[in-house]
Length: 111
Length: 113
Image: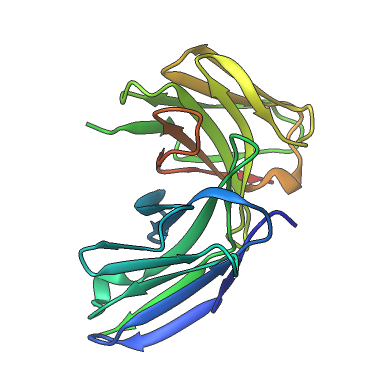
């Protein structure tokens, strides 16, 4: 399947803890993106990391990319109840215009 | 101002009917997409247009036909609706076709009964 694999499928943490989500893929990419989807809403872009970058930060978000292992991780530090959502990685393919989404991680942050 | 807007938000219809979903973006983007999200939250690309030209046409039934009258609009027409078409359909746009950041609409929840 071209779709990436994300793990865990679901994650439940206490407010204030850190949340780490992982994304693995099989084919070469030119970038990898992370999106958030709140229940019943559209996806919102969080961060894009290019294939020649290893780490990127945006506020409480930290994304890493290891192209040798074909994997990426999204770390949310000091989580808040408002971070409760599904998080998707999406791969910008090297060989096409497609943006291929993973299966998502459902994050629940308990107050 | 809503960047990517799609209508309707909810659509309940009977099997065999024909329906359309409309999408408009006011971001000045060149590229627009239709995605389908199933009940397990898998998000799969269906079509993409770049400057009104079809550039991605995934393996979807030919009952689904996209139409892009101009680069700010991408509509999805579905003929002879089937139960399995029930899903949430998302429109999205990006500045270019080169895998840049995508902006999504709020989705259209289609229920076929």
